[in-house]
Length: 223
Image (cartoon, rainbow, N blue to C red; front, side):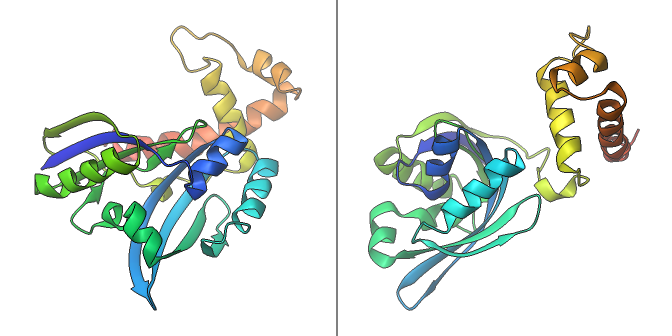
């Protein structure tokens, strides 16, 4: 199997624009592409790594993009359908990223600067080369690697246990401040203080998040 990991930048991209505007990280999967009445439709699932207030602003802005044809809020992620003209398809060729011969090994990651990191695999290197060629011409390609190796893992976002917004917020804060580092760089008391929350409330949210994730990871790792 051939694998390629690379970054692209699309200044006019719908989600790249929102990632830059709100300085957030966006994850997602490209689901399908079809053509109807000379229009190209692209369906993708998207996870917004931000607080609820920012998420509402992002969703509101999405409806202002003419290319957004359908949008469904699933709580932890969005399902979005984009509609573009045949002319735009010929100019930007986004359908090449939806080639059924490509395997999206990991979710795409849009950083706050609008750069999108992608990792694809294919049995035939030519399928990867086509995407890389177009990316270099149209999307400011940054090739991280292309190599031949076996796929030893496959990341799917919705396989993980569902956490509440508070649990995700507490877990993210703990990770960012080194609570899970060795040795630990902080403790729950300091984290609660930083978040202007009582020790018991912060601990409750964090422990519930851990109780959902740790058994899940243990089962997947066959511990």
